[in-house]
Image (cartoon, rainbow, N blue to C red; front, side):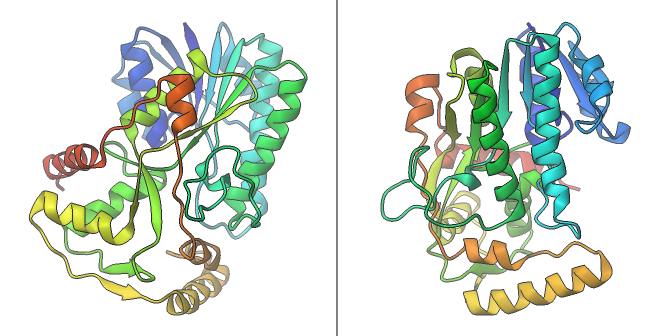
Length: 329
């Protein structure tokens, strides 16, 4: 098979390109920045196409002869001075990809959204159908939710789009913005990560990169158009996550609990500074609000319908830790 892969230079994109190529498929990897293509160039069966999801002409060229599309490209930063940047890339850019795929006669599309659009949990793990009663916290989440609304319309019009919703992805690979969990692990191992958000009891869901890659591929093979699938891992609190890191490495780094009100003040100060200087903040008020909730999520639907596999977090973290130590700089 031949696939177009947008976001090919991102964390998930690179690992997905690698796996597809190893499986014998041809990958048309869309990229914007030549300096980020080194790993892609090392994979057999990967052809590079310079382009942008906002440039429809470049999409048409990259789509020639493709059987399917993996649309992983997104503007996933926590902040931008112009909030419309999120909607321009994540909504309009996605519509550009879908329309170009329709014109090219592509059979199936896997769209990478985010588990951030799923409802926070309340004692029971949330799933794809859990009603969301809260507004979205960030422009990233809101723009992804809008993109999913557009997907629903296009599926009704006959376009075969399957949506996947990765949770907090971690593991070996590019230490990009989208691999923030692995960057956090690395800082902890270096003794440079000192903050425990809130009381440390907030629960999140952590997905190993190899599982997420396989989840994308299985969604292409088995997913039902119009459906969305949470690609997650195990649910664990911040405190237990770092305790597990300590147990696996024998390293213990003192963490200091930072109350939510203090985080709010710090985040607001960072946001004001960012708006004045244009320099991205480490934290924003909407992201602080997310720490007030639990994010226990269930991947049962993906397990049942896609044969999705979850790597135990001890195994995934051990692999990640080994990779970090082997790639010290």
